[in-house]
Image 1 (cartoon, rainbow, N blue to C red):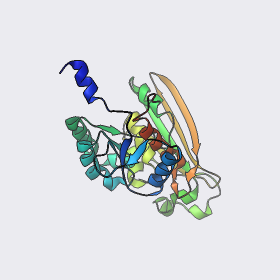
Image 2: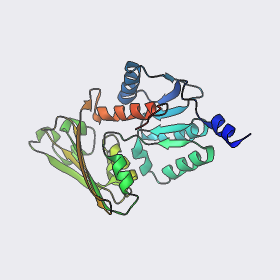
Image 3: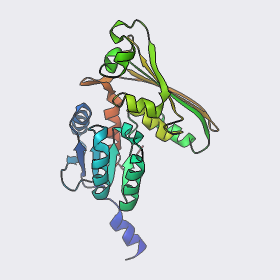
Length: 253
């Protein structure tokens, strides 16, 4: 077989529907399927032989589903990136992807400017900080309830400052995006995270700042929360839709 024939045979056929499998059926997964359906995308849910597996079930699902998905599918998209804080888990998934020629995809989640941060990290980065601001209701059911009076707040209150690894471990549902920042930049133990409860906040806010040889980055975004889950942002579901659609898009941005 010639080289051109081999490349043609190996290339995915972007003219046929993308077969996806969803792990989990929570607020994010339901929103993603609703958006894909509303946009009329040529995507089908497949329980057997999918091209792409999307995890949206929580951090405990990442490794077992990831190892299987990377063996049999082209790609595995991870929503519960807080799982990467577990020692050796990311290395095991990367090894599986390398062994089977598949790919781990990390959506940008609720954050913007991740592509710029990842590009900037090609040169040395000096610092990366990420401030996450959400209304008190978004922190219910987390350790924040034990540290501050969420019901009695009258002003924005920072209740946690630490590394991305610590933030994701303590607040896996709220600080998943901190791991995305860390992976794009200077790692879980050098990325600094601040978590804030603000009774005046109407959405989920993020401020990302970085300095390094590239220059400086200062980005702020305020997302609408998912109606079915105030801990997650609408943009998280939209980022998954984008990464799914890009698998078959002629122009991927």
